[in-house]
Amino acid sequence: MLIEKYKQEIDSILSRYPVKRSALIPLLYLAQRDEGFISEPAMKEIAGLLRLTPPQVYETATFYTMLNLKPVGKFHLQVCKSLMCALAGSDTVIGWVKTKLGIRPGETTADGLFTLTAVECLAACGTAPMMQVNEDYYERLTEETFDRILADLKKDGTCSLKTGPFMWPEAPKAQ
Amino acid sequence: MPKHELILLKNMMQPGYTGSLQDYERAGGYQALRKVVGKAQPAEVTAMVMKSGLRGRGGAGFPTGVKWGFLPKGYVGPRYLCCNADESEPGTFKDRQLIERDPHQILEGILLACYAIGAETAYIYIRGEFVLGAKILEQAIAEARTAGYIGANILGAGITANVWVHRGAGAYICGEETALLESLEGKRGLPRVKPPFPATHGLYNKPTVVNNVETLANLPHIVGRGPEWFASIGSPPKSTGTRVFCVSGHVKRPGNYEVPMGVTFRELIYEQAGGLRSDKLLKAFIPGGASAPFLTPNHLDVKLDFESVAAAGSMLGSGGVTVMEEGTDMVWAALRLMEFFYHESCGKCSPCREGSSWLVQTMRRIVAKRGRMEDLETLVDLCKNIEGRTVCAFGDASVAPIMSTLKYWRPEYVALIQEAEAANLIKLEPAGARH
Image (cartoon, rainbow over all chains, first blue to last red; front, top):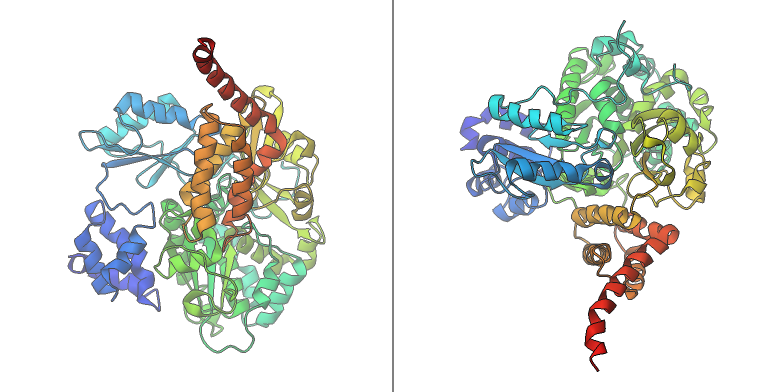
């Protein structure tokens, strides 16, 4: 049960809104963080917490692409395929995933580590091609950096090539 | 040194600037808020914004002060401010930089707007993918709360202003202001029929203002340095101030460039962004995000202000300028954008929901060299039956790539179809030859 595990966090979320239903997406995110995806029991529990019917929760949950109603791999590779990234070679990146991991968009590797999704614009057009892996952005991808990201993710679960606070072109360096 | 004076990107261009409260205050931050809270009437702040000529930076370009002025006078009860940080327009990545590099500039803008419109609660609706941006904003809010800029009794003036970060979850349409409100209410992000407008019936049916990140980030400068100063920048009287333009595609130095409105596309593309990569010729550019019709090299001397770009048959939109070099397949480019709109159509209005699917199928057929000449009429017919027939502006936006590429590069469509027809004829010929 989410309420037992995250009582304080749930109370804090609820306190921000005068109408309970506004807490729906934040609570769905909480459920997703807990299980890796949003399960039916979690949706039912959230419905109870917010005094909604389960279909009201489901209709919202099914609208948003970032809410996963099915389990995804440990690392969710989301490669942007919109025009701006495509001009800079995003189809090539999707090709690398296929060659190196053997998965196409919508598929997960047999070991459950990687899921590939071709997504629409992630607001990083000036640093294309790019991908988001779980919560992190990786930009200006080359085959070399791409290989390193995959290796580091497998080994350490994270990679230092992820983007920090964004600025492009970069600010002048301090003397 | 940049050629033009920077306003919004000035702080973050300073070496070592971290965006912390301390850095922001040292750069003169929160002085504008101190100048007005408890010292000037809220209406005076609105008057300043009106006088500055500031227009919304999200896409529509509506005058900000006028938008605020639509709130019902003398209304008793809660009012809300929503900061639209759902930056999702393909080609646009300016808000991300403003949020992650100088969050307090936005917070000060939010607080000034709250003061002007009498809102005690503001929500920053940030696109779900900006996990880092949301964390940075939350941290900045905590800093500002401790310093007494946010909370009950801000700056000891007896005024309450609370700011919360609310993450979206991956839906382009939630950048449309009424869809944003629906989403913030925990529903599917379906745009509302207007009127009534959010100014009277917004979040929870209460008077609400929705402003873009960049719009709000301008407020501390307008209040701090005066509306006359702001109104003198750019291309007055209708396009004042600077804009952070996002240049992407086939240029040497893609990125965010802040320039006064009214510079030409030629300057932005060739001077700021360094011209085309590999020094190829320019073939096409999109002047204001995916929703803006494509333009050609003939439009390079068009000025980057609302009126000039509109007169050229496109729109300044969100400020996302995408450059395409000679050799880019324009039918393919239009298909890519159409796939975006098909994916993001919320499904509320039939013309957009069904039409976008049909457009994608027809375009895919043409690109795959299986098209027929009558497909071109089908495309135009579909576009005309979407445009102007939907609840929100998404419908109009979704047909821009196809309509504008058909206008300027129709021979490319025809060539693909002729190739398809020629291939079909060859296939048919042996059968016919037997008789």
